[in-house]
Image 1: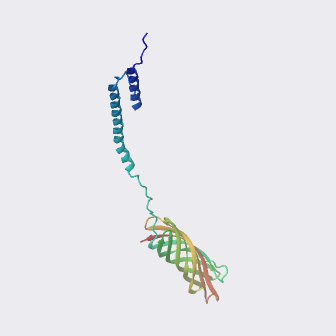
Image 2: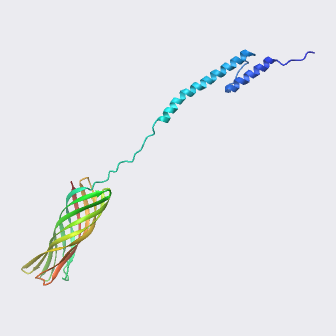
Length: 249
């Protein structure tokens, strides 16, 4: 009996199929020719497969590169657009005052007052500095027996310093005060002009770039002066609360 010899053709066929599957894990149906022809076909298929992969890589890489080179959008902080308090302004005010005459018991003049003001502001960031002058007419008066004391007018020249939160300004103020004192006794009248000082504070709100409204408190002290009709030195201290509007140029 003759011995069976393993077929080299079958082994070659299996190796060729294994090599092709290793090249790309592509399933192969059927058998490839044995010998050099089969190996050449496997080699050719490997080359084609590699060429396809390289071509796909070159096709995709420009698009990826374009995405990487595209600049990212930049975000800048919005510019500060706070309210501008700089410049000259004029305005009017209306309020009420109540006070007391010194060296004269039971005389406490009070009444409605109003007038106008003019000023100038300098702004450094959120800090605002300036000066303001005002002149007021007043109906504050009081009587005691045959006597009547009134404060027909007064004014101030003050510095202002404040802190601005956009269109809201909180400030302190103080400076020189001056005003008139008037004493009536029967048919006789005596007037004096007093000097003094004032201190206070307020809040001002910008309504538009040019218009603002304020609420302000002042303590005004007009120093004593001699009155013939009373026979003593009299002065006047008063509390003032007023509302006003300003127009800024």
